[in-house]
Length: 229
Image (cartoon, rainbow, N blue to C red; front, side):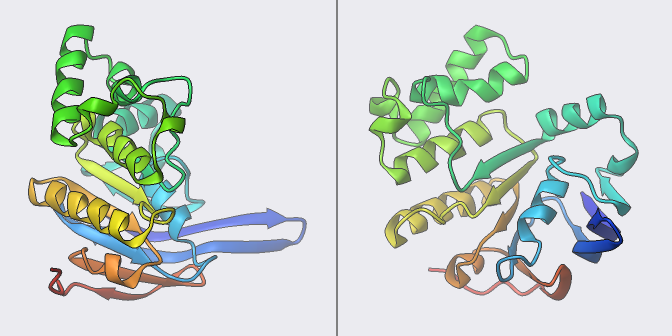
């Protein structure tokens, strides 16, 4: 599904070059659940943003469904992001002026789905996430955990092939975090490929693989699935 070869990300400032990612080589199969870990500044979010087509590498290859992403024009990149990728952000990124139902519907509008079908999908998602009673509330009327649930609901409404999560439990207390991680685990078991960035060692274990970054390099790529209760 995803192959990264000799990927570099850097910024040039006068005569100095600062590397964010260095010589990244890895692949992710369809249906995997991968956790990316590392200290602050290791390049985790940058790597996730490149995979999610929100950023570009300076050098190397990124193949997504056997298509070279770095060679694509902007319009085509936007189409790939829209049609295949869902994104969950640590800061939720909900639209304050929209209700829960309207926030969830935005990803479907973006994908060009007709109104009647959108309403049916949103109704199903609200029911699945047990937030039917919150559908007419605004984000500021929700707890952090509820806002993150809405963020995930919005991300999966359009049934993405790839779900990217950047510190999805970072602003939540432990029990809320476990609820979110169990939901991601369930989505993965249903066939969604998931790549998450996390600082939390316990939540990283939900992944079938853990990729560890240090100073922009992959220092470990463990393919063993620890047990999670």
